Length: 137
Figure 1 (tube, one colour):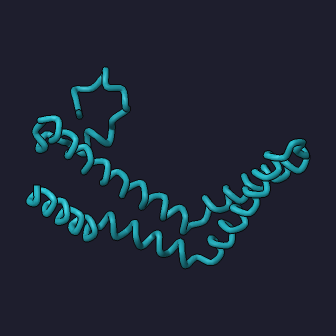
Figure 2: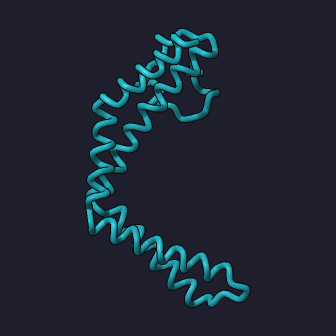
Figure 3: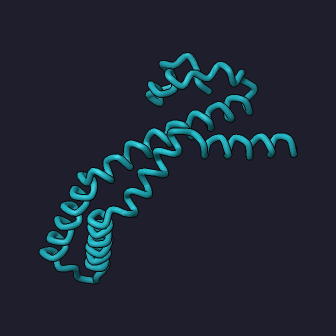
């Protein structure tokens, strides 16, 4: 078991050196330094809290609730349109795809399948409908 844990640690270290991981971390740090984006996120969180408090009232003010809901949606749209956030979302999706591939190889191996049979290109096109699939599990 100690050998497997050492291999897992080595995989973790290799992951932290991978280009996909490095781009994800860089995009996250860029987001953290983007003052305009951070202000939008802070405003969004406050409006969302206000909306939640309004919705939890015994008799919510529907006009105020609707106005707050509109403000939350508008701020969310501004956040998602921010170039730093767009870059972060793309980098995060790529990193999550990499993690998913790693997890699939481990799951296949644990199920007794040949880990070399994993094809990341085929997995990327997975629809989730296993009835039409030759097998990834």
